[in-house]
Image (cartoon, rainbow, N blue to C red; front, side, top):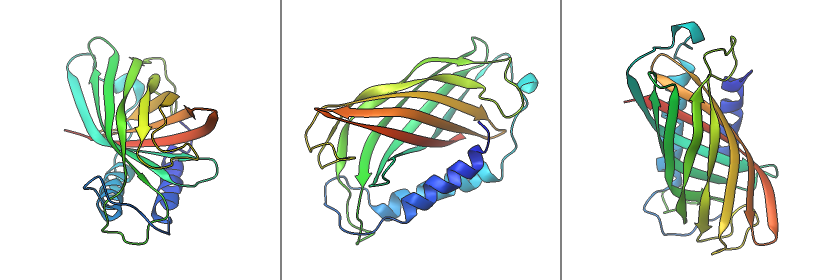
Length: 202
């Protein structure tokens, strides 16, 4: 989890630098998701990491926010809404990511973005209470199947696409910062993707 805050800033710069054209479908615009992502990132940037020894041993918390995925070529951004539930008593974490849209070559920031159907789930999520300073405190996998309504990361529109990523996160006083690394595979196309999850405690 070293340099996680810097990586957050880097991915958001990629996100806010896209230019070109878009299509209408989702009811969410580039301006909507850009503002939401940057507002949550600002919360995290001003939040304080929790030392592993100070993670609660009872109770639970829900973190709601966004995740942004990019490919190595930085052709576009896959954006989803996420809820992560952390149970401190059982040392487990579960969650879902849905309501995806894909942003590529946006010229009208208020135009609706194309939807991507499907959902990712956080599988095998656990709290690592041996994590050192700066190391991941929550580890698991974000996996699922998506179907884009437009070309996504070079994968054709309508192609069933498998998303398989490892996930790690650190807890902050009022928020959660996570990273995902893996692949998107649809048809004969497979691309490496990386994601940043930023969420605030409800």
